[in-house]
Image (cartoon, helix red, strand yellow):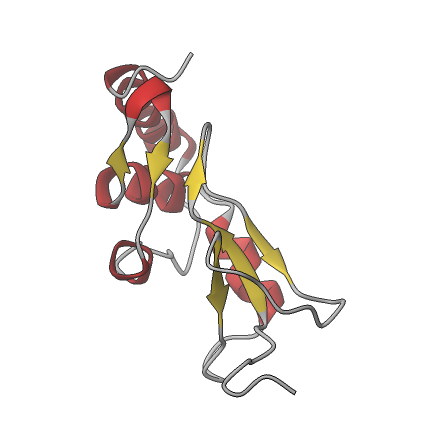
Length: 113
């Protein structure tokens, strides 16, 4: 057994094109440092975390917290991921359109095709 190897609850992509991916670790795998290992603290179940992660506010927050790399890549460091907003509720449709427009503008700014 390798010391200090832990099985995370989920994985978060380190670099992404469209948006960072959050994937639950149902297989109980370990990971290298090419993805972030996510450990739940017991405050929020995985299903709720996934629901909140897949919202427009969380996607916009990733664009604002992360930083662009060449070729349109978005890099999100652990501290940036920890600062990502995870809304408790959905936003009204008229405001959702504005948030989606913000996401699109941020992606254009980092040259994501």
